[in-house]
Image 1 (cartoon, rainbow, N blue to C red):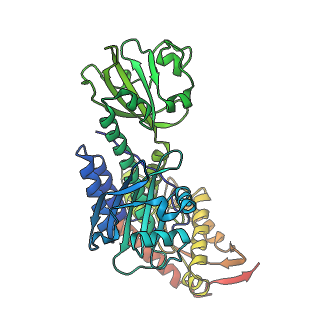
Image 2: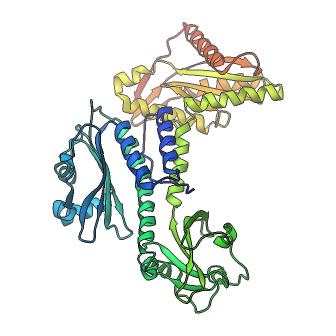
Amino acid sequence: MIKYSYSTEWVKNMRKEFSNIMSTFWTTVMDKLNESTDKKEVINSVLKDICRYFNFGCSFFYTCNQDNAFSLSMAHHAYLNFDHLSPVFNLKDVLGVRQYHNFSKKGRIAFDELTKKTELEESFARLFNAKSLIVIPLKRKDNSIYGLLGMADRRGEVRKKDQSLEYAYYILMVLANYISIYMLEKKREKTMKTLNKIINNSGVEVHVIDYKTQEILYGNEEFMKKFGPLPEGIKCYDFFYPGSEKACKLCPRKIMNLEGVKLEEPFNYQKKNSKGEYRRYIATKFHWVDGREVLSISSVDITENIQYEKKLRHYAKHDALTGLGNRHKLLIDCDDFLERLRKEKRQGYVLFADVDDFKEVNDQYGHTVGDALLKEIGDFFNAYLKTRNRAYRYAGDEFVFLLDGIDEGEMLQIKAEIVNRFKQPFVIGDLNIYHSISIGMTRTNGFDRTTTELLNDADIKMYEMKKRKREKQRGVVYETV
């Protein structure tokens, strides 16, 4: 079964955490993409799922032929008819040469009813008769476009700064990568009868080796561009690792048991090569023109895909604004925290902190300044050695800390150092923002209370601390730098 990994650059300054619901949907999509069923059915199913999940009227996938004619290949409509989706169009004719090149460089179109559209976006709005739209081009290395994937028209109310468009974009990028690989595999199937077309027109690096002697018999153009010309009679391991006298660690003969593999039956695997690139390999065993058994090996660089998957896993458990662990991660880590205390028979501490009168920042200066302040606070907790990897953003301006391996005196010192930091200003643009913080603390040995009970107890003690601050009101003081 093929395992797929995907990539793209995560949105900067994202304010909402990657919710449990989004994580569940992501898992569902990945499970479908990893099913060993008919891939066309999988693509149709995922098109339907993302259309319904992100509340769009329709989703679609177009393929492009050699004449730049885009034909509707797959589509799903939730409530719109297909009048939005022309069955065939020439994208260069619709956009013009300048806008076509701008689109191929831009990499996506994304707007809703509240977006002030560019000239390029207006052209796509007319093409799809859509008020809101996401379109992703599937591109070759020369930036020519061979497919379009997207969704048109949101159902229901469109809200300002709605992150759904961003989440939808990243899920579509995952599907686009899957479709790219699917289309590559279909292309291999169609061209298997003509070996020259398989080797030279697959769009990936392809080489052919003698199965028994491991001599490289052929390399396609992409292969030659990367590795240079092939010396006659050279062994594959000596070509890739000069001076080597045995098969390299990437050899499919070592990775897979090929004795039982049927001729013309492709198999897949992925490995990290000596240059640090993650690559997916597709190998096929068949008879060469002279009758000997050979292996055709093609490879695709999936380094960005692997990196993107790591980012997705990170944001599933971390707050996008502050970089701290989110509430979901807190609940999991707190359960492990209590289990560790029970096993090691030690004491631990749960601290619950709330920034005093934080609402005044948003009310007076807006959420942009408020978010900037929360990010500065998160940076402090990440940089402060005693709270690094122990701090979580619980909600809004509330934070939780799980501390163990210290005695009560050290805990009180950490608490005091946090309070003292908040006596100093946080610099946001041309503002010095002074804020105090209230911290409640509860002790546990891992046996006495559950995670929920501990958090509730620390929360209650934090509010008791607020009540005891009667000698002065620690609100917000602003000074222009």
